[in-house]
Image 1 (tube, one colour):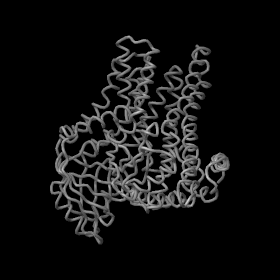
Image 2 (cartoon, rainbow, N blue to C red):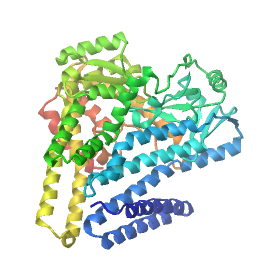
Image 3 (tube, rainbow, N blue to C red):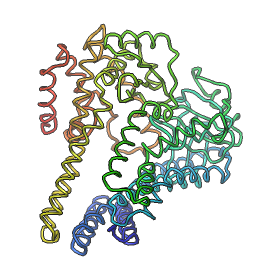
Image 4 (tube, one colour):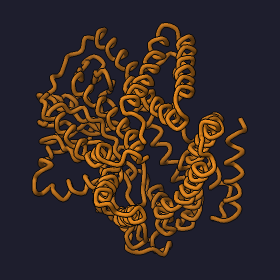
Length: 571
């Protein structure tokens, strides 16, 4: 049976309070704050572990951890808030009035509630003994945290312009920005808020920062690494101001007409976005299906079968669903289309189309469970790279299509899940009194949780390394061109990432060096990249492409296996 909801809530709050305690104690004395926070965590964990039965203590500890990290998300922008506040006080910039009405925030809340409806109904009416309820609660913590942050932004955000420094300041208790106008890449007006583009549950590959506070006219300002959306009372004034402060011409577009999300021309897009949100971003579709079958008294084996069939169906239509989520459109760039045609011909794949999606990220993605239903999507920023670099990215993604990596990426999870299920069944059958073995079982459960991302990373990185080296064989420049493609991608992404950090993270006296994915990092970060991340470090991928130009084979595979261990432990 699910532990008492009120008790769960208390432990979530305790976790959040520990984070806040450490944060404010650290402001008085950093080292003392860290020590006190660690002591508070140990004390709370010890109390939970020895005050409750073993299964309950594991669950309560997990919820307490979630409360801690939720508070971290909500307070992460505090330093930038103080920095911007001090600069506003010192420079006395002019305030640019924002348009504000409650319809905007109610729309966000309504969309979130709709997407979560299936999960919430299962939480209320589903079987008490279902472990799915615990998973739902974890998911709700994440979404509710983001909505609290969105509410704080809506309530507190203000916009300022400093004429002497030519800087826009976005000042909010939850999320602040310092945006130099010299970095603006483009500016555009939109007739209204496009909820289907801005709501986080409706998006993928999104680099949008939503500071809109009404449903009126929107100004869209593109910076390296992110695109800012604001609703200003006089948006034309701000647009003209930005245009006049540029040393070089920037991209200026006409006002875009945005139809309401409920307009009949938007219904297909709305339906696709909702389906994506309840099946990919959330679990409402699955929990809703299970709840219906539960009340129809469907046998358990049929419940499992129906859920698996639904999962396979969603995988089958994933290309269409993700295309809608990304607002992807088939590319009209003739050079890109011709390059893709040649690469796909060499790869021996057909009926694969290239799409583009508007995003400030540098990325590409292959979707679809089989070759005939696959698509490759590149972001608009990626398409601005040199032609040879775009060819390399297309070749890499073509391998994912050819080898059906999207499908295998899902299927590789099943053996691990089966192993976990066998362990759980063994514990239930052989250890009826868990409290007698609580320490051993505790470490076993956390070991299984710890090993899952490592297992998933292993499978994913194997496919990524193969895509690099096999994809190189589709290029005229071979492995050298693939290495140069990844170098160009990494260089531009690093520039955008460092700019984004500059805009949103408070500057420190002992500031870290700029991020560079092309350089070998410290041992801790390399350990994370090699053992947890979906891709091996970019510096390593480029280095191996230059060193081994014989294509995909055992030599590359063994080198990756060796370096996956060596690079994770050698300074």
